[in-house]
Length: 72
Image 1 (tube, rainbow, N blue to C red):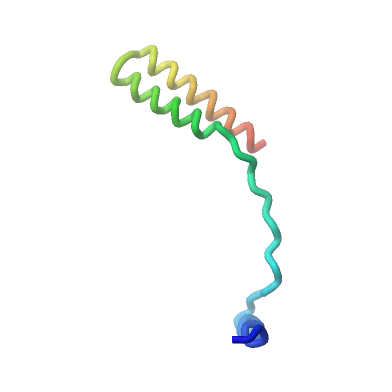
Image 2: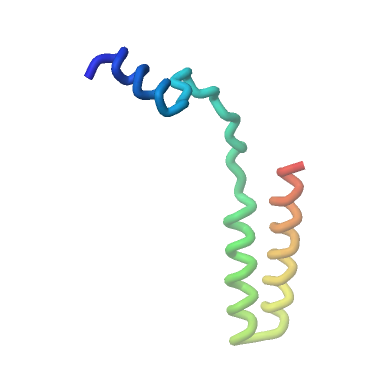
């Protein structure tokens, strides 16, 4: 098919064939990995010790706060 046929079909259905605008992607961060480790420690602590549960919960809270702070 040639380009004019595509344009004609797009116009018929009301589509815009102009190039898409580039979108800004968020920068990479380690907070999701830290949050995952905190959750793992929390569940590991449930099986073993209250201290490990507390450490895991603390890591999870800190990681969640850090990750949320990146969106501000």
